[in-house]
Length: 373
Image (cartoon, rainbow, N blue to C red; front, side):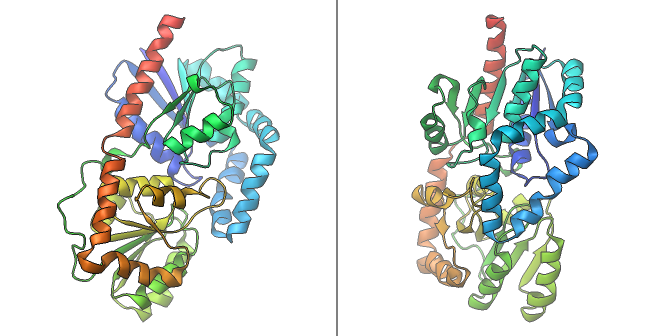
C-alpha cells in the first residue's frame, strides 16, 4: 500500500479544494493507494489559521487594486512568507508525517510548497513533492521551486509559463484542468442554445462573491428580460443588499442565492453563465457545455485568463457591466448561433476527463518510486 498526502485549502477561495476533491474522487479507482487530504491551514495554530484564511474574502471584495497590491506583496516577499509558513506549520506537520508516513506529497496550493520542502529537508526525509498548479496562464513564482519533483500544468499556457521560468521540462507534465465528477457527464450537446423562452442567466463570482457582481445583476435586470440567478457564495452582505434593492424593483426576476451545494444543477438549467474568470468555475462550465461571459478577474493569478479563454473560443469577455445586455443580445441573436459556436469550441477543448488522466499519472508516478528506492 502506497500513501499519498494531499495538501489543499478550503477557505482561500474554493478553487484549491475543487482541484483536490476532483483528484481524490478519481484516485478511489486505485485501491493500492491510501489518500489523506488536509487543509494546509489546519496545520497552523487556531489564531494563525483565522488570520491567514479569513482575510482572503474581505480583500477580494475590495477594489481590484487592493488584491493587486496583496498579490504583488506576496510575490516580492516569497521567501520570508515561506519561512514564516514553515515555522507556523512545523509542529503539526512533523506529527502528521510521522503518523501517516506518506510516500508522496501533492500540494494544490502554492503557498505551502517551499515550506514543506524546507521541513522535509530538516527532517532528513526524501519524500517527493508534486505540485498541481491551480491557474491557467499566470503562474506564480511559488510553483517554480527547483526541489519540486514533478509539476502538473493544467493548460498549455501554464506549461509554457512554467518552462519559461527555467523549470526543467523533464519535471513538468501538461495535464488538463481537473473538474469534480458531479460536473461530468451532464452536458446536453443536443440542447437548443436557448432552452427557455425567457432567458435564464446565472451570475457567479467565486465562493466569496467578489467583484462588481451587484452592478452586473443590475444591468442584466434593467437591460434584458432575463430571469437572473446571482450566486453570492459566503458574501451574506451582498445577498442581503441584492434582495432588498434589486429584488423589490425586479420582483420575480431575481434569485439571490448564498453558497450553493448543487451548483452544477443551477448552471445546467441556465441558458447563459456570467462569471469572474476563475479557472475552476469556467472549466466546470466547459464540462457542462454552457456558454460563458466573463465580466472580470482577480489581478495576478487571473490577470490574463479572459484573453486566454477567449482565444480558445470558450467564453466572451465583457468587463463593462453596462455593455452586458448588448453582449447577451449578440450571443442570443439568430437563434443563438454564437452560443452554439462557443459550445462546439468547449467540446473540442476538453473532450475527456482530465482529473481521471491526472489520477492515473499520479498513480504511475507513485509506483515508479518503488523502482527508484
